[in-house]
Image (tube, rainbow, N blue to C red; front, side):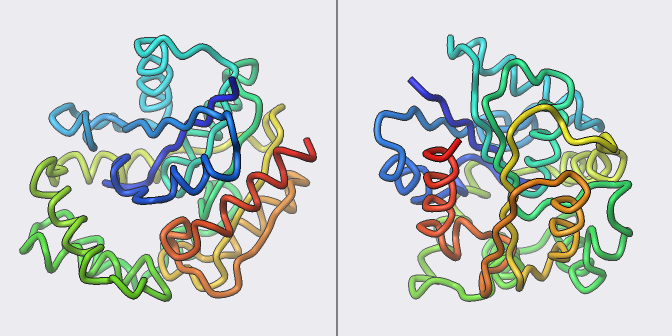
Length: 250
């Protein structure tokens, strides 16, 4: 059975995938799709987030071993989660059958003002300093979605419930941001098949980061013309189609 492991980004958890895991299962019949969390988020919200990407990678590997899920795995990861995927592929390539990297940025390939757009700093600061949970989630949705779903209120309500149930501490949010800033990817592409997906209208991470990475690593890339940073939210069906096409051809 083919196993797909899903990894989210900064302060986000497995529940934030919403309907996407089911959309992916629908395009990959027979595949096992698992969404896991990095320490400090989701099921691990009471743990301390590591200040290094490498430590989060080891946590993810241990979670799968604890679940009795054996490699090889295929990783689908976005933003901070995609940094973990790159580190995993670099240091443990034999465990992976491939990686799908969504809207990520890597130190050494892109300048800081593209890796995290300056216009997003205010919203990110509110994550660290705290605010009304519903207002925080409204801000995050505006920042990460370029065409919010018709049921935008329902999404905010769902995300607010997640935050209330499993709140990410300001200290953990800072550690995750620090880990992302510290991590430097290898100059050479990992010895794992790569697919890069990027949103042209990403307001958090400049699309040029993914385009540069694909060029430097000679990786396949597909660009969504209208989606925002949370590409699986804006167009999960498109993401699932790209993944299924790549899986069937490779």
